[in-house]
Length: 142
Image (cartoon, rainbow, N blue to C red; front, top):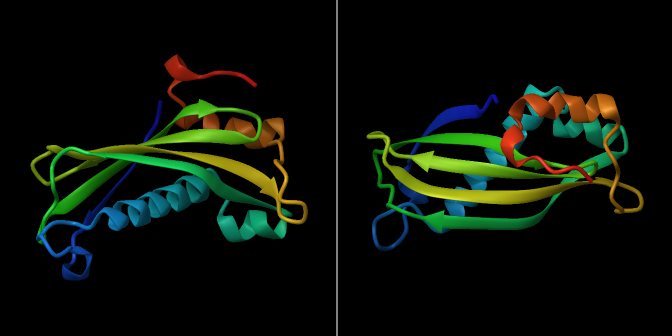
């Protein structure tokens, strides 16, 4: 299984009133990760939008373990724990510069037809693009 992995710096505008990274920033980082995943598999958001379908989120969950602070560099990892015909569950891990787990989360995404906003099944060749990022031990079919 492959993972999408990237590093980001923590900036002053991401810090909340008690001195650590604001919880909303993690959702922004997840957005960056989803964008990187789609680009990596050749399905950049602006391109699939032109093809008539879009990715939407239906669920986000984050568990915070250890705070991140100004000056930290966060390492973000993303992979799929579930890949269905029209949806996927993406797993995220956030580590600080010392490799301490700061947070972990998941998001469920759904592909929808941009006209009807109804689920749109991935074609087999589209679905196959995501398989390298799937943790095969957790896959379920639908």
